Amino acid sequence: MITSSMNGVLNETTNKIHKYESGRSDFQTTCGATSHVAHEHLRLIPVERAVTDTGANRCGRCFENGGGY
Image 1 (cartoon, helix red, strand yellow):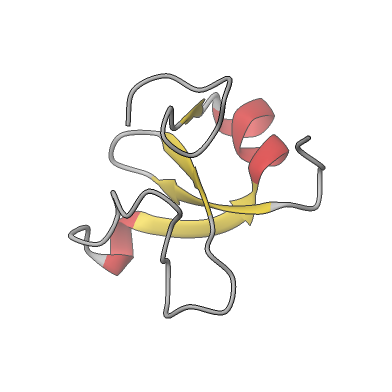
Image 2: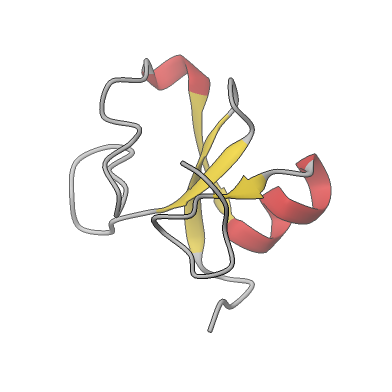
């Protein structure tokens, strides 16, 4: 279940939202897809806000209802 307070990492270049791996270093995600992306292209944001405000797509590795990565 995704709650509105769940933070994610938005890759602003691809407009893809990933699950944030809390307690890890900056911008770490469940799938690891953002590990090679420059921090200036990433933003920590609530998942639902990224989807509704920016039209971001959910990462298919991080979310059951996502697509691609």
